[in-house]
Image (cartoon, rainbow, N blue to C red; front, side):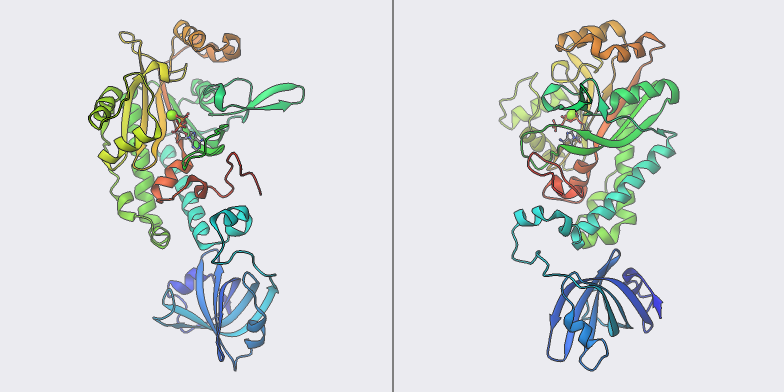
Length: 427
Ligand code: ATP
Ligand code: MG
């Protein structure tokens, strides 16, 4: 008897063989002479049949949903079985008999979110988490292929990156510190040593509004590198996204299909992406009857309306400096315009923001003051402009926003195992 993973059985490697699988009871249906079990492990779900005359019958009768077990039997191809194969059970050994499992078909979405620790066992969450892990892998592969060094920035920080309204404060012994909103400023430090750097780390935002695209803790894919401009930045970002999407379409095809995601949407992500300026975006919105004026920041509805026109990822660049952060570089001949670029996708809107960073010390000081920030909080950041300043660019891409788009998820909370929102922080 060989112990196999369920995926091996479904892939047809075990037809006619005696095997053992280890896992949990996913579904159970009892007839007078036959018990149908769906058994799951980390790799898949397989139908198992237990006949009344089998030695496994009495244990099969005792089994409850989510009980853990080892099941031995013979693999048989059967077109009626989901996946095309089933195991005819010969012996069952119960490992942990489950109490009455609280998640049943009639339960509300609210309830399912409350028992996240149990819902994570669902096939749907299993598939999403596997694809997520693969997407992280493809991201690292791409950065590595471009000679980037992965670095580990701190999460406790002493000054805001993205403005005070979404900053989480905390007591750090007897000091007031914050949880980081982005690792950008720390990546900027590291480019002076390592040049091309990236990190994949949590960012924290005290977002009070409930939307389908905001978490209070999310994973941020951030890159930063010197001697580059806006065009290099957009080219890098689109190549990264195209690589992630194509690799996912290729290597995770089965999981995507089982999840009901659109594989073609991902495989057809090709570079170059369309690029429009902020000004052009405002004009396009005006044609749709929007009252938005030049200088206003886009809201979710504006982003969605623009994204509908493209129906694929695209860039908006050259934003009004007033709606962008203090570190954004502005055009010398047009100080009202920042060299900042967002990547947008249909339905979700913005998935990344990047730009050229201000590398001139005096301009940076002026911007810090204009934004009502304290110069002394950014002393070390100004040092980067004092000692060998260089033109440099960077971007931040929200992993969960990306997955929400890639996998057609209704809400960002399903893109992360343990979502944190205003109201959810348990378990
Ligand atoms: P938004 O305006 O949509 O709230 P932002 O412009 O404040 O986003 P950035 O500071 O540009 O966000 O962060 C870079 C990226 O991080 C965003 O493009 C997005 O993908 C992701 N991101 C930002 N805030 C959140 C959040 N609260 N939850 C999940 N992802 C986020
Ligand atoms: Mg942004």
